[in-house]
Image 1 (tube, helix red, strand yellow):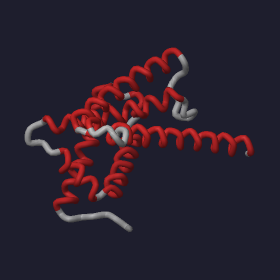
Image 2: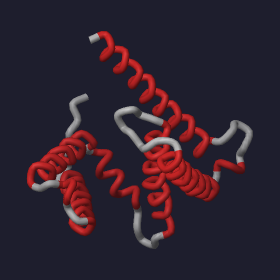
Image 3: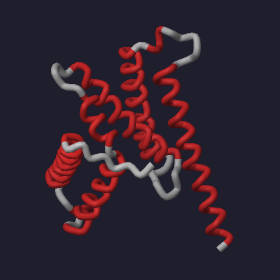
Length: 172
């Protein structure tokens, strides 16, 4: 039992380290150094997000192929880089929403922000339903993409309907 406790504490330290890296990276991307006013523009932040995202993907591929495989259980460096790369990729794509005419990503974010708890619970229920209804590890890439698109569509519609009817799930 003592070995399990030591291993658990070690993993907590690694995940805490991952969190601290993410916070520091976020501060760099959006605030820069205290005296760098030129680095605070939206365009420069967008460029930095894309560059750092690509660098993390490249580092992930190199680590995965030549050092060790990505392991969530071990929370190794390859896992840290893949987590950072995926999150930065999502954020980088969201930064492009400013270039789409007539589209405001802020509206959808506002809908989800109003009911974060409800969105989270619905997402967990949908994930459970998908995992119980099919063998998700053996589906084709097309079916997996269709599931993800349907999942995102259902979550977005549910958030919009909750916003339209003024439903707000908060317990604090």
